[in-house]
Image 1 (cartoon, rainbow, N blue to C red):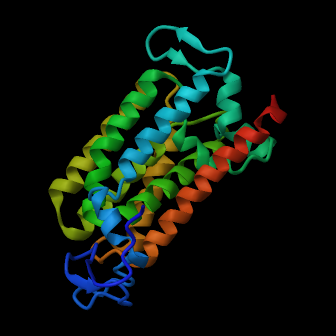
Image 2 (cartoon, rainbow, N blue to C red):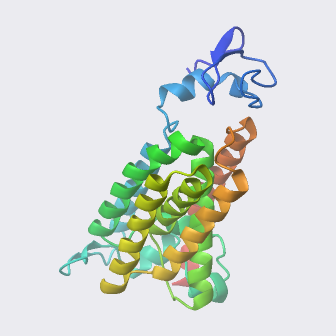
Length: 271
């Protein structure tokens, strides 16, 4: 079913060279475990981002639809308040903020909040940015490091917002700003003024819009941007992605979805 290769040669995900499926490293670029336990061919079929962007968009859309099923949804409150999930749904599914994190001790919401949205336009705009930035990041730093940056940036954004005192906060924009922060760092590191300038322009415009639009959490944006920049610096985007990065990315995603399930199962205790 999964077409796992156990013999023969596969294409290295980092440099495209042919390597043995059981090789410890690629002898062209040095990537560890280039065969990725025999699943490299399958993952390449998912696209350059290994399916990460469709996973984010599909998961966020599914969770948003489930949140709308909880009684209390607002059909049309005007402007950004179209198809707004109920306050109970937002709390149960894992919105972050000072109340969940520090008052109720729901620290795992730092992971879940990036996958939840508070209105139709909220998820629409955020998923448009994920669709535009995700493939670019995967092309530059690799799909696994993109997933790690996305996850860590969200945690950093919501941790800062919670520490500042924002009662409840959610949305993929903290992670989106993390991708922008990583692109800014890559532009500085590589000397690409075009990438650095364009990413910084997007970030500044979105920061300004955050001050103009009611309810936008610029603290989460700032924390996400800093987290993405720091993670890019930690990885050094000019180096090849390693095999263990895929394992770490997988752990990040599993931890996130486990947190969402745990949040829903225990969320009604705080209502």
